[in-house]
Image 1 (cartoon, rainbow, N blue to C red):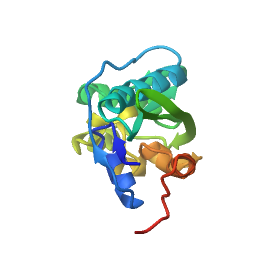
Image 2: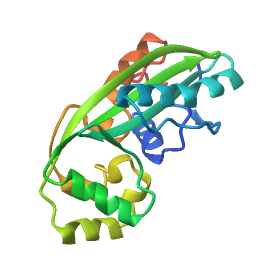
Image 3: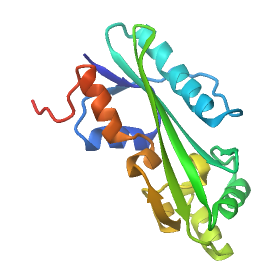
Image 4: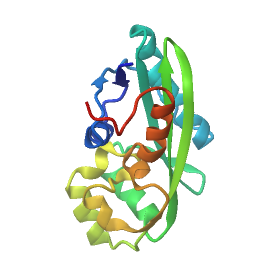
Length: 190
């Protein structure tokens, strides 16, 4: 069964490549939810990304995913500008937040599997200078919560509890199990 990633995220693409999966990328634009229960929002967005691509590609397995960063009941999406990135990083500084990724695996217009994973991330106390220097890297602007743990943003993190890959954008160990159950073996080498 062919695998299609229904995401433009370079981080998700890189993770699948890192683990040797063969896949293509196809995105059909959709409107994403941004308010409400974080788990519901992430599940809804993951399905919205994968289902239309699965209808357009019968017989393929389509992977849609959405990552949500939350703190104190607030969903922290991708900052719209540097000012919002600074606000998010200031809000996260010295505190523990949650990163939840929901994955929808769809084929022929049906959700075959849906699962989520949550990782707790503790930030260090951040100085204004650190926040400003990080924002000036440009890295925060296309990432939920305004940081990327796999880049310079990793320097802001004191500790994590849970799956590192989940914070990057895909909970790879869980995904590998679900793919195996659907006939795609991550460890097979042709």
